[in-house]
Length: 172
Image (cartoon, helix red, strand yellow):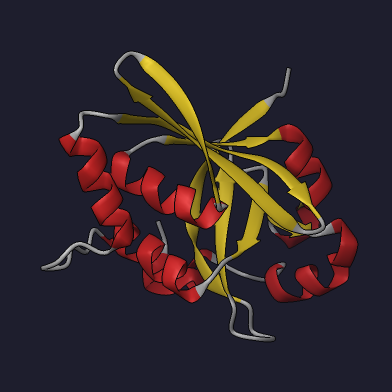
């Protein structure tokens, strides 16, 4: 049986080397961090949910939430269940007519939906182990240092000195 860690969206950041958006997940104790590079449209959707922005016409993730509401289905949770070749895999658990079904999803879409439905976000422990390393550095005021094992130095260079203010208006 897989072990999962509950996480929250800490914010959206931009990779300064290529301006790619990154959603930052942080565990509830603030000890573990999982950065996931995502698309610009998904980043915009996640940022809108964080900021509580609603549009006059529903965007894709809002439309899906509206459909789920109309058919009286409930998003129970989302889970980031695996990572293979630096690609993350997620599942959205939806309860409908007394049954829970699991739907394959990209983590960015699952997170955008979780934020709109107030569903909990979980990450498999092996994904955290395989994707990132997170430690506390006492010399840097207990700042968290993290990075992909495959390219830990690059990610450290990008993120190790980030402060909450670096997340700008997208800070959760």
